[in-house]
Image (tube, rainbow, N blue to C red):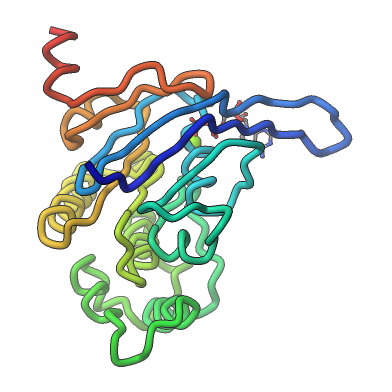
Length: 233
Ligand code: ADP
Ligand code: MG
């Protein structure tokens, strides 16, 4: 069996800033394997450690200890390679770019070293229904469009893994349906492993083939949706 994500004994201790010496153990000896090709749901309440885990995978939060492999690549040994294998759509919508959509995506592609002839900017904009906004500044987009733009940005380098951190928070039903269709499409047609964090069981149920429950920085249960549903009745 091959794994998209392998996490062993992962710990994250935040040392709070602002003069406070209070520490927060956000991830507590966490273990998790995610199979290649799955649509995986990481389900847990607010504060469980979902975003911390996701951000460690993508290299934006530094772990305290433990081992993490992305498509078999150790994030400590080959951080840049590991980052190139994963695309992440963060929970907080931040669009801090001063370029229109098309240029911003081209810029990101350049950052990943993708040659102009290999770029998929137009294709992404079309797939995510943003092509007619290609010359617009991200700040001018509606909330739903901003999120789609961030998905395009995460997919610019055709990562093997797409991670969506709480993608449907504050999103209307129409956009949700669109998002799920996109997720299923890239999963089926391109074999992209998709990881979604959520605090809604229904959402994980609807979309994911495998689900892990996270609480207090630990995985408390993980199984296929089928088995979990059978168990829960
Ligand atoms: P989730 O995404 O599941 O809601 P988070 O990973 O955001 O959970 O947070 C896990 C725990 O770590 C929470 O108690 C949160 O308050 C704490 N935490 C998150 N980010 C920081 C930070 N930068 N500094 C200190 N504590 C943090
Ligand atoms: Mg979160």
